Length: 187
Image 1: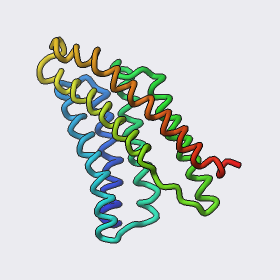
Image 2: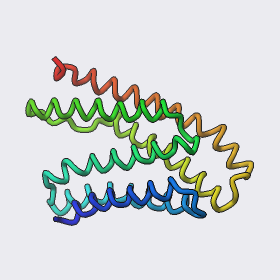
Image 3: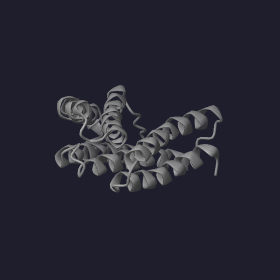
């Protein structure tokens, strides 16, 4: 197994520990979860960079890299529901969009067509990560400074919903645009 693929598998392992820390109420658990999420996110960039630079792209990597990304993001979103960061319906919308686009890509692949990610989809992913990181940072700050901090509450209540709104709108819009752009595959 080459280094990029090891990083991809490592991201899956980090996701397990990330979920463990975020799901428990241990002191500094949110800080550990934030750290693991950042490291896991960086491995996503690094494994792709190394696979291209070292010319080590494999079928395993093509399958597992996007899967590991989706597992990390979906895990974070689901874990944020009971922490009252995200409403369940938001997470359902985001995960549904990911399933639909993955299904479309599988249909395309069965017809010998490769559907690359488009710029709008990358923009959507960036906002999803920004929103997740925003809440993880606030949770970690709560570990460090106490949950009763007025500025943490302000950010949670006033800024968070805007980030969620932007993320949901981009998620829905990018999914519909991608489906429309590739509608010929659905015929």
